[in-house]
Length: 377
Image (cartoon, rainbow, N blue to C red; front, side, top):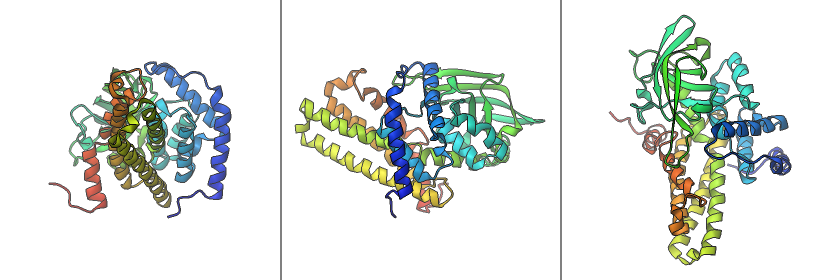
């Protein structure tokens, strides 16, 4: 498989680099990590700049390879991350683009691309754990609306979101995977209570969401009633297949910075540490090649990443933890200083073997969908 740029892709890469070099110095200071209203405004402002420059549509209307070039170049240049736009741009938006009606695409995709609306993800529940199909939030049909009651947890960016990609159980009598429906819920609807959750790193980008007789129009259903599990697999394919691509580039940059720091503070003399850095260098090079392979394969099958995204997600989440454990070894006692680089990143890295499906779930997907092993009883 040829992973090099075509002439058209090389030209796109050059134009993007030139634009980034001109616009990044003019950005305002980034708000503090705890200022989510400020971060929402900052992230939406950056998305608006991308839109006005003609780069906002790379997430859906461009080829997967062009999308990968965009993620690679923006990360290398130190451009703002998607931040509060994460769910809309990388989860809900691609899902609606792939599964929504023309009216739904027209309603929801342009505001995401223009930097006008933020989405959150309402998948996980307190009693379901990693077993997403065990969700119990109920939605009963009442005329032209679903009436939703239940609760969600780890709802990304709920405190600043306009919309929520929400999984509900519309048929409790159906088999677990067949009674689920995917809804777009307006976060200003009556009956919604948001309670922010503070993470180990001290940030609050997650929340509990309590739903008490919340009315969601039937027109906001993406896919058929009861077909939400299949639609969700599309969402998770994007999350595991391409959403972390920019982070691989960021990890490679951190790895280079760690080598510089180790040379400065004398820990480069430790051969075991140098070996760890070398192994990680090879690991992230391989992960980047796997990402390229995944997006090339997705391009050949309509743009939706396949089960190979689970291979990437499984290895990447562990490699990221190993990277920041190595950062702690480079820093020595300074790794306990929350003001030092990489310390908070090390704390947040602990979540990566849980987020977007636990490592145990990824093992099951790989075993069943790639290796063809029988399902557990």
